[in-house]
Length: 250
Image 1 (cartoon, rainbow, N blue to C red):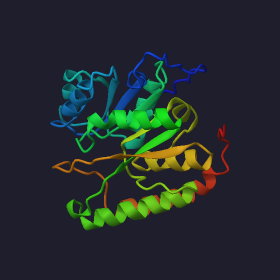
Image 2 (cartoon, rainbow, N blue to C red):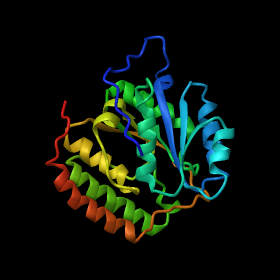
Image 3 (cartoon, one colour):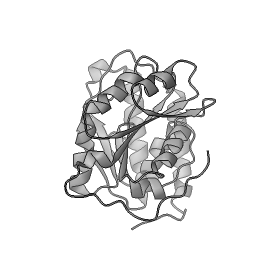
C-alpha cells in the first residue's frame, strides 16, 4: 500500500454542520457477502452524510459488489492481507479527504450502524482522540472461551497502555484525524487494533469509552480462540519497544 501524506491543516467544523457529516465510516471486510450491504445501507439510512468506505480484503465472494451496490466506496486487496492492512488502506484513503474522524466497524453485522452518532457525540463532548465502543455484554450469549479471551486480552492491553480499557477488543471505535495521522501500526492482523490503543494511550492521547450494543447472530469469527491470546502476549512484548519510539505527545 502506498503511503498517503497527511494533510497539515486541521479540518474545522462549521457550527451549522452535523458532526457526523465530517466522519468516514471504515468497514474492513473479508468474505462478508450477505451482511456488508446491510451494514452500508444502515449507515446511509442515518441520513447524516457519512462517507462509507469498505476495504475488501481479498474476499472470494461478492463482498465488493454488494458493498458497491449499497453505496459504499470500495477499495480492494487482490489477496487477503489481514485486518491490520485493511485498516491501513482505509486510513490512507481517509487522509486524502477533508474529514475530522473515522469510525471503524465490522462488516458482519455485529455492530449497529445506528450507534455511530453515540460515538460521535461522545467524541464531540470530550475532545477525545479515541472513543472505544464498549459492548454491553450478556455472557450468556457468548461462548465461555470467548469471554475468557476477551477479558484476558483487555487486561493485557490495559497493562501495556498504562490505562484501563474495558473493551479493548471492540472493533467499533472512533479515531480522530490526529490519531490516524500520527499513530502508525505495523501489525497485519487483528493485533493492529490493540497496537493503536497501546501506542496512543502510552503517548498521552485521550482514550474514552461509549456504551454500545452488540448483535449476536450467525457471523463468522476469523479470530482463533487459542492462537489469539498467544499473539497478544507477543504484542505485549512489542509494546515495550513501542514506548521508546518517537511519538507525538501533544
